[in-house]
Image 1 (cartoon, rainbow, N blue to C red):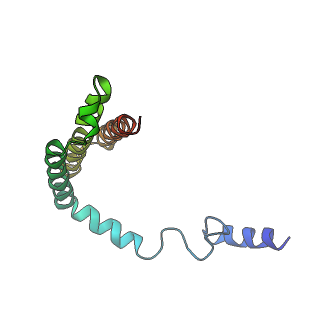
Image 2 (image 1 turned 180 degrees about the horizontal axis):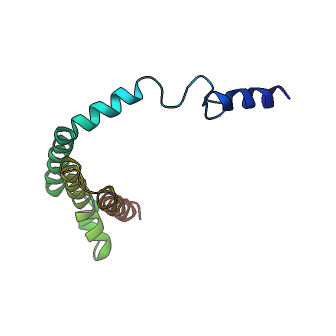
Length: 125
């Protein structure tokens, strides 16, 4: 009974659930952080793109030993899955800097996740 009372009281204050009763919707820092990231979108996107492009180069040079022991699709996934994932994340960073549509950014990010999943599958199998 007491839990129901807490839940109904909390519902009127904008609290999500009993577990997060002390955390209000968004919190006081969230609007400032959101405004800061929006105003620095170009710099953050380009910095992320540069870091991801660097990782793509690193993973193009560094190849796991298992790639030499396999062939076919598994070798392809191990050899190129990780660098392609990082290259796609670099593209996402550039698209964030250019303020491209969210759907486009999300599609490329999901493709990067699929490349990484293929890399992991190839490595673990």
